[in-house]
Length: 296
Image (cartoon, rainbow, N blue to C red):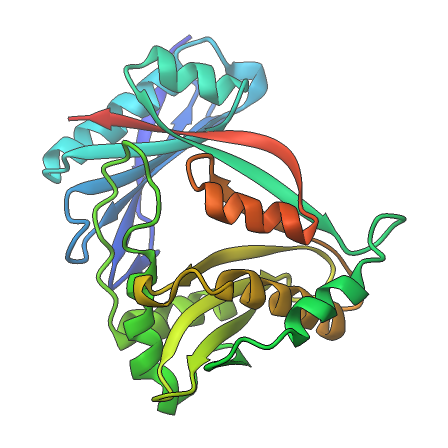
């Protein structure tokens, strides 16, 4: 079957990355699949690109995915990328495709879900007790949407809490955050019509933010919300702040979005501390995903 690969113009360009796109089609013009390559451009990740390949189930095992991959890898080489990463759920066609095309497995992730409705959701009292437990020297604060101007600097500084997040063998680099990038990330969520809530731990000694936990909820307040990240600065770890902030995220989600069905989080299997936090808060594992990497 002849396959035509057409490069597309993707307007999705941000200060930190831009996307390249391709469409695979047959002789009749019907689309067979697509590929997107996000090329990171910010300091600390100029070596990296992220790949997503989708092929219609009826068209798989006919070379469509391989042709799309060939185009994307050629573009990554042209952009002088060192590594291309891609993710697939364990045991799926995408998992097998990446492994068969020279990608190596570099990270395993466990997805877990906390039900906010149904018979197993009646744990609000326990969450409230965690939130109300005092943490001497610290207090919680939160906001919706973009960070308030007066907190933008200290919140940006707190982003280094994720610099040593377990990434196993992934050539991820270090994300360089500034206020512009923090505001752009919040705007991207809002532009999608979703709702961002950020909970932070504040040091009482100087008013600085020492940890954060972000949660994104669908714009209609229904379905499942997604935890974007929870981190505590190294010098403030060991005090239960991550557990505290994530519990407050759950409490706020229940209060602000009563129709929300659940909350989903993904955690590297090697991040044993955060996995213990998730277990203690009642999250139940649902499936595994695998991060693959192609070294160019």
